[in-house]
Image (cartoon, rainbow, N blue to C red):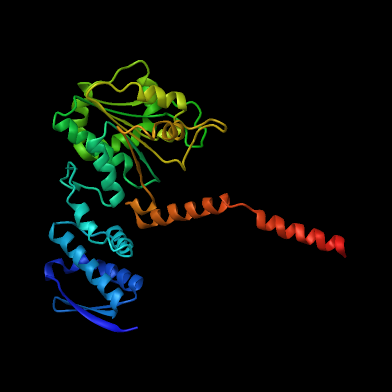
Length: 340
């Protein structure tokens, strides 16, 4: 194995952003690619085998480009660039960054951060109905709400409707105090939080009072026809097949519907089928309907969340494997006992 050295010039004003606090990002790259990275006076020397050094150089250059565009580099971006490098796709992280959806009330840009998220956003732009399916932390709901607010501000729709089934997450909450709205608000809190962050509490309240933004339980959708609206059904894995059919048949002219869900986090009573499961089977051949499947690689919360998702996926996959080998061994032991 031949050892090679490669040099990268990095402007001093971008050095801390690319390197991370206490060189944490560089240490991740070194450990993953088995290279050594040395910095002196704005010059970076990468030492390692030919392939590892080339990957490290390419990743650092991509992170530098993100920094030049005004991004604050995160550990998630570093880890994602590394994972893409093994498929020789690390340059796509810069292409993804071009896809601006909108800005939050504080001026923070909202963009897809992974290839899966970019495909999801592209489908929301081109399809009338889109299913966003994936684990927690993949940005399914947040990106959908960002798209809804953008469409509303651009007068592409007259109304935003956010809904989710009001079902307990594996807990018996008993009788909640207050009127009907205060009873269902806890189930809808994540939707309120996202709206407040993207458009601001004042703008939300102003438009909500006019009836232009509605956050309501799924049961409130029955009997309505929703024209010229951007409609988001969140936590769709907790709908029944009848509820899902009811929701999909509410969609009127000029509307767009996004259905988000995590097939691994169903809170339905035992024996009740998920409406999301059935919808995937029934509708997957209709061209006008998009299906975007996000994975653990698309998790953009704390890196620990990505590890948790992967650990659960691995455990559930292991549980599905047939236990025939243990039965064979048990059968052989019985035969040996009988023969003796």
